[in-house]
Length: 221
Image (cartoon, rainbow, N blue to C red):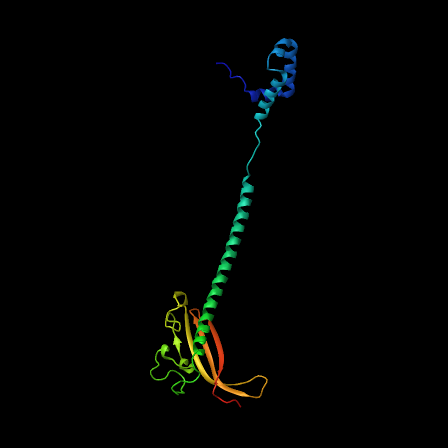
């Protein structure tokens, strides 16, 4: 069984470039005409074996296991940090929206009350709804709202339309109390009422909006 001749890469490693150059020099000296006529010159032979020698040495590429583990740990830490920041940002945004909704409910109720007369057009002066004013749509003056309550899930606007499911988490109540207020900077007292609108959410948090409304027909003293 004949031996398989060494490959070009093996021959390059066996002889080395210097050895190949010496062989080529000897061949050129013994047979100058042959190497002068043929295209396989000394330079080409050396280059041929040089490539073979280099071909046996492949560059090692890629990452070690330690490098991969360190990179994975850094990436995981970065992802967790970014996720936490996004979560905190979303929580703050939702909380701000929740506060804004509660404030809008209080402001809407106060605006609705201020659009009505201070005194009852029919002359009634008792606080709270008068006879026949069991529904909010029948209120005709400010003090009719005294004691008004909207439980969770029943909050509606001035036309009686629900605000939407996002507002089902809130309840709303109103008090109207007779009071006097001293005008700042002058020695005069004004009669009127304190309006207090309270909005409460399902977590027990409350938002309160208060406004003093002077009686336009009450003389000052």
